[in-house]
Length: 276
Ligand SMILES: C[S@@+](CC[C@H](N)C(=O)[O-])C[C@H]1O[C@@H](n2cnc3c(N)ncnc32)[C@H](O)[C@@H]1O
Image (cartoon, rainbow, N blue to C red):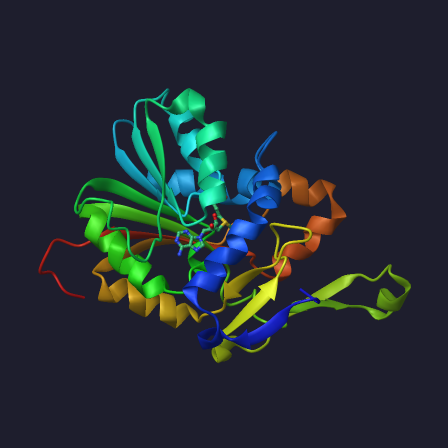
């Protein structure tokens, strides 16, 4: 994350953040064109699927769905016996999603929409809401969580993945041994920084080589408090590592035990009137 530009989160508007995604859309979508992007394939998506449990016959909202790879994966898993709505604020990504997922038109629909105000989505209509690697890119995340609670049926499930808010902080980076300057350094630690400052970091992140988007850094407490306010009770939480065999085979993965890249959480919407 050496190239990152840091600004106070309040200085960036939701509109600017979405604009960044529209500009990055083609490059981001290319990561999923031929096969699943690496981190999604081996770490994030299997964990989300495990947390979701049975999805057959369910109504699912894929909030901030990108080019729709996760919707596609769920539809393939249950041979189309599912109803999925994919919503994303980037018009370009939704165009790509519609093109790329034509074969699933009977069970997936895609629409442009801002997660913080999904007026086009009916209330209490979904068994499951997924938000895969997107909440930290949504400026008005508290409004998006209010929308999650509105569109879920009581006892509906919300599963979301994040860049780990405690480790992927602004200014975080590997600590290298002395050979670093020669370019052959060994990763001997991971340093975090600026955790409580609630900065927005403009960077290519893990998703693009050239286009930068805004990543809004928040504390774990921020997320937990916002979930609780909406009656979303956290019932499970995972911090996946790369698969064991991969860590044994590939030395570059061995240092992953020093940090956690992703945080994946499951919440259940409590019955109306049940406050936390
Ligand atoms: C890292 S991508 C993740 C996309 C997809 N869920 C995936 O796993 O590949 C972040 C997504 O959040 C979307 N996004 C950002 N702000 C949004 C907002 N306010 N409402 C809806 N989508 C938003 C972006 O357009 C982008 O598709």
